Image 1 (cartoon, rainbow, N blue to C red):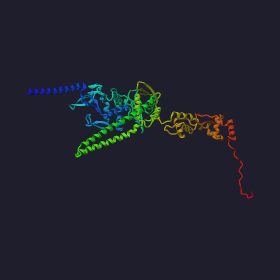
Image 2 (cartoon, rainbow, N blue to C red):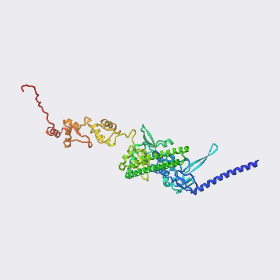
Image 3 (spheres, rainbow, N blue to C red):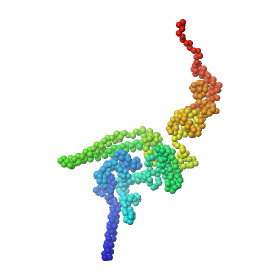
Length: 573
């Protein structure tokens, strides 16, 4: 009995070893076949294995156009999510295998899912690469038993087989690598700590600012009442280690400053960019029309196929004829819908973008940037196309934000923005309006200052017109001295007060000032005239006023003292 058990144990061990050895030989044979480019592996949508064991592009033009549309849109939008939204919005259909497992001659055309877009962009097969061993298995001890899991991705440098230029590709290998870099940058919470992709939102520089003090990326916080204001905060050290927050500041001033720098950098090539945008819009319209034409051609083929199948069946066999007739009607309905979409898209394709409007916007980029219809994500993508990252710090002595812009291409520039004091807000008058109020406050009334500000086109911080009460409120807040004639010892008069003092119209005082007879001054052009009261009592001024009064052309006509005789009903007259 012990010998029998020993013999059975040896046989079992040898059998297990033989199975392991056979499996190892099979795997080595598959690897050797893969290295010889002969191993048939599953291929993505858009490729087929030919009868002579060659990998070739799917001959279906509609399938090819769907794959190329994904790459063209990603080249323009630089975001897989935006590609998915664009294709769903414009109803670009995507092929899926009819059996749900592998590519074949039967396709189900449906709106794409996000996994379809990302699988096309991340698959190296579309770059003409034969890849094998992209994933691996892992073995773990779970509750005393070994558990294997499959499908864990491996880095590209660890792939078992990677053969370039193996077959015809939809894109080149350089384009594939560039797409992977874009997808890597678009990852919002990647551990590298680099700049993030633009994801919309009120903060223009979200994911681009790096703290100069600790080297970490700044976060965006939204505070206040709706609509909430964005602030950039460096608090990663506080969250991770309990240290104090490095820097914190509002987003509006640095956003405006960087936007101005970006528009200044784009200004020399704005016209060329406008012409390129017009060509890109026309190309997209042509691609959309071409995709609809292919869909209509496929629908026509399906109608003809359904018709032939219906006509070949025996009319007496109603069980089959009724089903084929229903399929024919469904194909006709689908063809009618395709023709309707083509007819609706034709006027849109015929309408070319307005060249003059594009060139006008190119000449004034600030108008296009500040337009209400400009998407925040578009602005962020434009900024990220020119700027790698921005290193920011605060100059506490000067209370200024110091931003060092690292432009793509290796150039650097430094810009500064004033950091507002505690409680200071952006809804304040412009610096020009403040200078005018300070210059005129001691010489003009609040009502006169408000009139001049409105004539010059200045507005309050809330965008309202100036009034006497608003000018007075601004003076009190800014601690600006009051109107000088309001003080008893000033001796200054306006033109209206001087005219009332001498009893003449305002035009008389204006003529005397223009003729140089009456001294007067203006704080700035178009401001009211200021006249000293003592200058009105000068001999030459009183003489000129009296001459204006008594002259037959310039003065007033004397009133008649004699009364007209009254008429009576005297019968003797």
